Amino acid sequence: MSDADEEIAGEVEEEEEELDLNGAIEGQDVSVRAEEPSESAEKLKKKKKKKPPPIRINLTGCKYEVLRVAQRRLGWKEVDDSDDWEVYWTDTSISMDRVSKLSKFQKINHFSGLLELCCKRLMAKILQKMPH
Image 1 (spheres, one colour):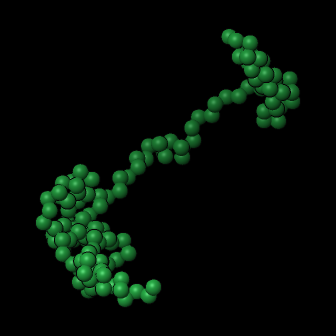
Image 2: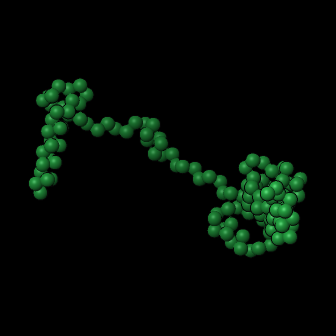
Image 3: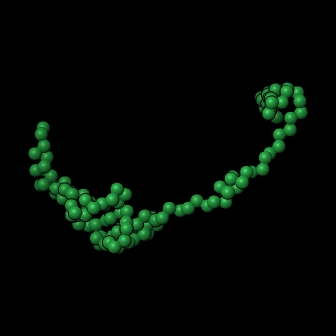
């Protein structure tokens, strides 16, 4: 052990002697024993964390297989239009009716007006209308 290690060990011993554990007076013999884990702690250990359900994705409007491959790798579940879903992926534009019926937790890969942003000619018209 180096001199520095011995010095630190000596300081730790001195501090331990000065400690007043559970109201004990300095110099008295104080024995500290480990308490057994409480019942609630044991119950928490026994409880397994529930896995969240897989994200449900609707790919009925998608023709690209790469999205299905990605969905399987992510552990997401593919569902139909008749089932509940969190993500809707489509290759075409979305009607305003469908957008207005979305719940707060549902996401969709298109939005109203997307065509105007993707087409250069239409986007140029929109940008010309904007005030300078």
